[in-house]
Amino acid sequence: MLDINIEEYNFSLPQEKIALFPLSNRAESKLLLVNKNNQSISHHCFQEIPDLLPENSTIFLNNSKVIAARLLMKKSSGGLAEILCVEPINPSNDPQIAMSAKGKCTWKCIVGGKRINIGSILSEDTLFNFRATILEKEGQDAIVEFNWDNEKITFSEVIDKLGKVPLPPYIKRDVEAEDKIRYQTVYAEYDGSVAAPTAGLHFTNEILNLIKEKGIGIYELTLHVGTGTFKPIGSNNILNHRMHSELIIVSKSLLANILKSINDSKYIVATGTTSLRTLETLYWVGAKLINKELNYSEGEFELGQWDAYRMDKEIDVKDSIEMIINFLDKNNLSEIRGRTELFVIPGYNFKIVKGLITNYHLPKSTLILLVAAFLGKELWKKVYSEALNNNYRFLSYGDSSLLLS
Image (cartoon, rainbow, N blue to C red; front, top):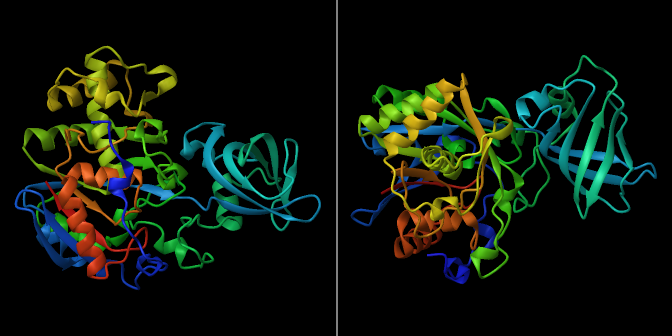
């Protein structure tokens, strides 16, 4: 299964197919409905989705919020530098706590600019006497300590004033004021992502209410999207690809809703690859608990990129989720949190997710491998050529698809 030639997941994506701006109305995106069972493909508008979801569905959304993570700073020489905040370190690796920090905090960052070294101090003098000190640096990766004078002001408030939305590298234009609203889902709640969970960008509150009126349950989970989501697969041998790690946080009440959905034979639909990876990760975390393989040190688990392919003992999905709930009860915890590197590739055996709402992805990317794993080798190609031939808009601000297995 791991013998995958990445060239088979390549296709021509003309620049003009990449959506540089969102549509004026979120819900007017095109939507391709794909049924894996009968191989059918039909064209719709996203606002039809309440009628397109299977009646016995439950739908899961990623409520992570994109932070204004791009900071333009000045070097002591007067030259410009750019900092992209990637992941918090102090006072906590929990973005919620780090964003509430007052006076100072430390982050893993990507730093752009010439002659920036360990010890360099970058500044933004217009507000708060905001400073960034480079503590460690290797290439563009750096550990940066931020300081500001007003200790009543949180880091969240600082970057909200000074930072910009970190648009993906393939959206080749300047950030506009509208991006602050449009590169965010309407249900975004918890600060921490440096890229939007873009499958959810099409939802409006009206559409969510129509889905609820159909009796379809809507539940929220949290995966903070990192910059690794844009990392291309640089080798023909996927064994050489290092999958990025992302933080997931799932409450005990959500686990109970997942378990109820499974017990009631609900058709579980993930909104986006992040929601899918979160739900599937939970199965493997429960399986590792059952196998006594899970290390939950410092209040976090880690799921490696190949762990799902190493576990040969088949464990019932219900048993797996129940095991996590029991683990939380036993340890008096209200949520499970950890880092997942789950790498979903063709041949992966989906345990929880039956349907997927997703945009159109880059060739030779981890996300295209996930879609191919979900639809199968021939159908994903058919879907993508259908989208390209019918002028669907690609990538983050692009159109949508509803994939049913």
